[in-house]
Length: 197
Ligand code: FES
Image (cartoon, rainbow, N blue to C red; front, side, top):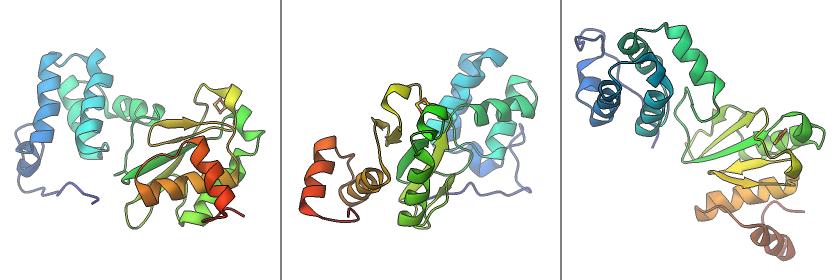
C-alpha cells in the first residue's frame, strides 16, 4: 500500500520534524545514521540511502531535515537525490521497471519500449500506477550498453529488450510477483499468452 507522511505543522520535533514522524522507527533509523556519521556533510549519500530504504522515497520534509542536520543547503540534498537513479522523490510501487533511454539504448528503440509500457500498464514514465503495483521510470545509461536496449525489473537487468518482450516481462512480474527469466519470455511467446502477438 502506498503511504504518505502525515504533515501537521502544529506539532513539531525540535529539529522541525512533525512529532508523529519523529517517533517513527524509520525516521529514527535515519537519525541514528546521521549521528553515526556525526552530522558530517560527506555522509549525505549514506544518509539518503538509509532514508530511501526506510521510507521507500525521499519526501521534501525528509530531505529538508537531512539538509538541516548535515548543515548543507537543501539544494545540495535535492541535487544528489535527483542525480542518482536509486533515489526516488515519490512513493514507489510494489514493483519497479526502469527503462534506459541513454544513447545506445535510444538508437535501439528504447523510446518505443517506454511508450508500449506506458500504454500497456496505463502509467506515465516517472509515475506509479493508480493501484500502486508498478512504478515506471527512465534512466540515462545503466552502464550495460552492450546489451542495449536495457531495462531493469525489480533490480534485475534485462538486455536486448523489445516492446513486446518488455511488456511480457512486466506482465509476468505483476501476475507472479517474480522477474521472469529470458526462457519465461520465450515460453510465454510460444503459448501465445498475454500481450504478446
Ligand atoms: S545507454 Fe542504455 S545501458 Fe548505456
